[in-house]
Length: 286
Image (cartoon, rainbow, N blue to C red; front, side, top):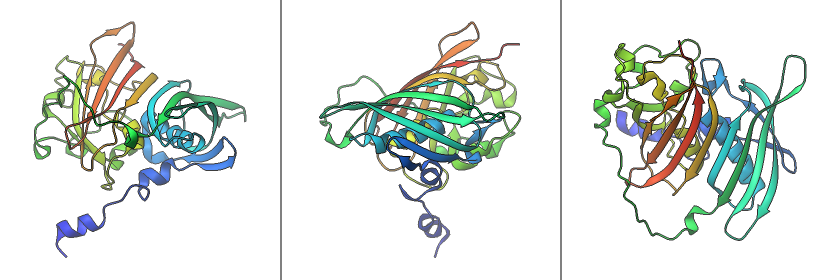
């Protein structure tokens, strides 16, 4: 068997990949789910916000009568840590085409008190039932070929602490947004990359919740360093993505008062805009 054929044979599939195993929740009771948050999705000392969103998204997919996230809005209240957690869901409304639910993830602090980490309000539907009618002026980001882009393995770690999540992603960054890695940030709030999961699993609506929050922060290219924690993140899933790598483009137009916004677009291999997001994040100045 050739090396390429061997690699293809090792590709993970949707439902049987590290991402699926690490976001799997166990139903303890109606609307209550247990999970052990994996240390494999940490950056610096905290669990990645996109991974957490996928965890709550999976719990809501089980609790609601519709399968796919359409819009998910999350408020990040306290930093999540690897280890046991419980997700509690509530069905707000179940309609014919859309259902709405809320979910919260809880952990325990050092004194054994329950602490809410993240709270989500989401509407779910069936992406396969949507009409095939697209009218858009949006265009895919202009990215160099993947072989001309660079991943975390091609340079030093961008931040101190854990970067375990980088080992689980196929991330190839546009050289035009990599000045920060060379000590020469452009000053522009832009980040673009090819994106996938390292084990070859194809994208699905749930992994899009990860994709919008998996690139290095735009703050790096604005000359800032360190952790950029998410305060609020809203994701709109627009279509079920085609197989193959995704293209993610993120922009920031306004940093003020120690906060910035990040607007993300995710495009699939069929040149469809499959997800959009906006988040508000905190930055450390000085």
